[in-house]
Image (tube, rainbow, N blue to C red):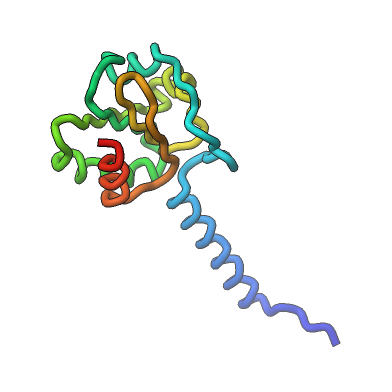
Length: 144
């Protein structure tokens, strides 16, 4: 005799799947491509537009996001907590992809939140998705 799942167990399975989806969305980010690939080759004029001088010896953390993106808002909270404790040689710049789509396009932004570490007009590293304050601190420290 064939046994069919009861509606209650089907509902529990559906709720569990939705929960997994929400958790994945939070930790991975919004619109993240399947394979973000290596750091993009960002044109010097785009970097200069965002960080100022391409000859700047300071480390700049550039964060791309949007107000409608939940993970971006969470990263902003982590950056707000982290920023006052960073050395003077480290700056944080936030770019809203909706307000500056041309800059986001030049940086090859396909998923947010996305963060870059830039020095001397060079992209040193990039990260996609949510990162905690301690993860961000360690990431920045590894390039100081």
